[in-house]
Structures are given as structure tokens and as C-alpha cells.
Length: 279
Image (cartoon, rainbow, N blue to C red; front, top):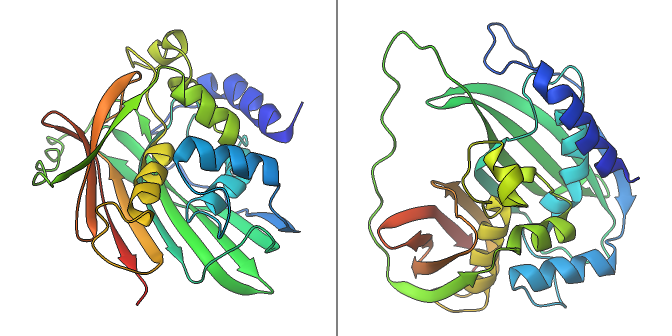
């Protein structure tokens, strides 16, 4: 059994005993550090295929997040982590690539938790992943993960964000029922909300939902290929907000205008984001 599988088992065992939102909850101060190592070509190729990236050239901007995911899982399933890991929903991500990275680069990865924040639907934790080459910070990301629970707030929670303006449609994507299983196999993220209808229903979703990281990666693959990108040059950074789950199967529209992009189905916007480019 792999380390990631053991983490998932540990999360399944410990999650029912953790109560999200308890007063005075704190995050562990520890960090997970993965020593320098090259990227395994097989998993990278599988990831590139399922997300729509080219299978040669620089690493996809999102891929160091995948490399750091097992370390993040170990932190989030540890006994001193305050939130139950099963059912966590990815809500946003910011990624900055300070230089182009390649499969032969031997990246050292550091992962740590950096804050608990009240959310209108529960509690959100920020996880940080950093990649270094020879001690130099070359890539970093910050991600929000939501543990949904009743807030018990004395005052009404803030309203959800206003609907964003509709961007011009660029492409239509038909997402199959098994997409979550394919991405989970390629990335290692086998959260049950993405895998099967039965396991998704255990966490309040009538159908499995697409991984947020697949959705943003697919958008970057589309933008990096030039369709609707509007600029030239390498994508240097991205901010994406996952506004609504993408049920599987479904058909969605990728839309973009300049640096901004979104994924929607009809009038419902699932994801919004923006990129910056070099040059």
C-alpha cells in the first residue's frame, strides 16, 4: 500500500472523530519536506493526457501541486489537523511559476498549513506548497479547502459573491462520468466526492463532481494552446475560484477574454480565473 493510500485510510478512520469549527482550533506547525527528485514520466504523461496538456516540453504550471499532494494529505490526515479530510472541497487556488520547470528538474517540495478562516458554509484551511531548485524558490501555490458544517453564527453569513459577467465562449467540453476516477488515478487525489455516485452522496453531492484541480488545469491547457488566450508568452501565474461543483457527467463551456476565463453550464458559472503571462 502506498503512502498516499495509507493517508486516505487514516483520513477515513479519523474524520468521523473530528468536529470542524470547534472554538479555539489551531493548525499544526509542522511542515512536510520532500527531498529533490525527478518527475516520474508515466504519471506525468497520464496527467497531461487527462488534462489536455502536451506530453513534452515544460511541466504544466499545475503539476508541482500534484507532486506535493501526498505530503499535503499526510498533514491533513494527521491526528492534530483540526478538520476532517474526507469531504473537503477545494475552493480556490493561486499559483506562481517564477520560471519554467522541466521534468528533469530535481525539485524540493515543502508543504504546510497556513491559516483557518471562517466561511459562510463552514471552515476553510489554506495549504501552501513551495518548490525549490538548489535552494531557490521557483514555484509556489496557495489553496483553500472548505470543510462544510453549520456555522452557528449569531449574525447572518455574508451573501454569496455576485455572478460574474459572461465571457465569450471558446470551447465546449463533454465531461464523462468516469472523469473523476481518471484524474484521481493520474493525480493521486482519490477524494470520494469525485469517484462514484454512492460515495459522493455520502457527502451531500447527488452525483460525483469534477476535481477543481482538473478544471483549472484543463483551462490552462486550453489557454496555453492559444485558443482564446489573447496574449503571447508563458503563463506565469493563475488565480482560480471554484464557485460551484461541476457534476459528472456534464457538458460545460470554456470561455475567455484576455487574461480572464471561466467554466459555465448555461447561466451557472462553475469556475472563474485569470492568468498573467511573461513578456
